[in-house]
Image (cartoon, rainbow, N blue to C red; front, side, top):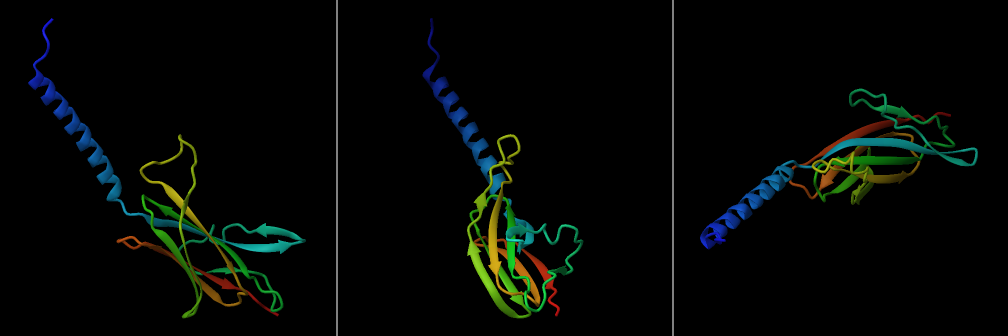
Length: 171
């Protein structure tokens, strides 16, 4: 039995390594070119009803456009004051998310937090476009319009999303 030419074996192995390397680089470059972005922001109120804690449905679930949504049936003695905010980040990134709350021009709350990854299972997980989530809890009495702005921190291409809530506080 005749052995193959060592020069042919070497060139075959080098070619194979080059093909594998190029395929790996092309795959990773395609993923890195897509910047991460904020794709959703859900806001719910947290209320105590009859001694039990209750979370409302997303305040913006049936909202079209970017107009403010009304929240709260509180009175002047008991205004709405707890908010849960869920920010969804889509794409490959390790960037943090900053959430700011303003009443008019006054900054009333700000926090930066690291997203966590929610694994949905191998069959539903999108490896090239993962979704990460950040949860914020905002306390404080609210009777004025509140603007929430979430933005990615630590990424070259900015991404942000805003929601405006008008609180009702009557006598």
